[in-house]
Length: 237
Image (tube, rainbow, N blue to C red; front, side, top):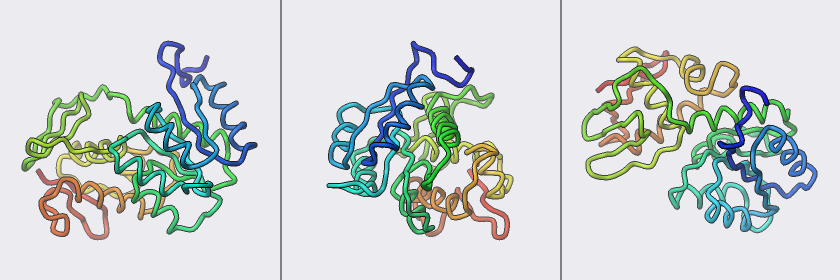
């Protein structure tokens, strides 16, 4: 077993929602070889039912599905408060499709045809981001009426729990830990997604918009997650 492979006692469950039987089988074989338990569905309705009932640790979701398309499934999952990481697969490589998936709450977007090795690496990276990190920082950050618990990986605003994805949490913590320094989008990609991830500036912008909508009193005039023109973003407590 490799260092990246899950131990038997800590096997994670991955749900594949893909109507192409060949792709689904290839994913299942490789994920199981990598140490994951795998669930699968061939259409959007069945996939949504499994996501609701089984609560997998990660979802690999095709866009072009019968009954419900991938974006509809993704939207329903996030609307219901399910926060497992979701990697969207699509034969369509248009930027707007990527933007739509990320805005609906996907953690990552992979265009077909894809490398199985790369997809498995992205699965491992997404699941690592959901684990409690051992960070040498104080356990709780507070700003305005927001409280960020690093150990529990929870965010509250006033008395209410704020549902954030694993990537949103890591992005917020990345900005907080910069202690007022402006971070470029490349630096944010490297710290949050890892140095091998290739995204677009729009990816960062979408996640920033989502954080502002959830945490800022006025998302159009953000006080805490600020834009630094020509550079990137900076956090102000």
